[in-house]
Length: 114
Image (cartoon, rainbow, N blue to C red):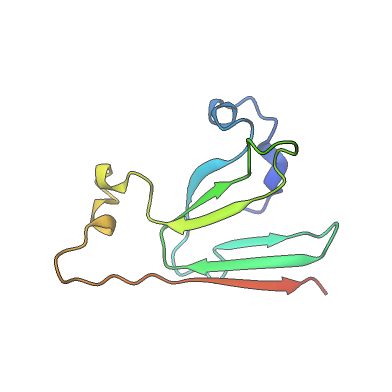
């Protein structure tokens, strides 16, 4: 769903309050999506960012405690679901057996709106 990053900053939702009215939350991603995460600054710079990954989750953090300017930055952490070992549906994604290799890929593509 497309929406502005700051759309929920002032929402009285308990999770937003805990995170100081910003994001510090995991989002499950659609697998095999050509643009799992897409950002565009249509107002100031025209810069775009398209992130694709084979990871199932992205934690979004919006510098909720940064002083003097809260929300001056944003971080996208592609990863396994936090606390996955304790979730039956995610447990196998974080178990690596002896002599097993797991490789994940995340691609970041920057562009400019024409």
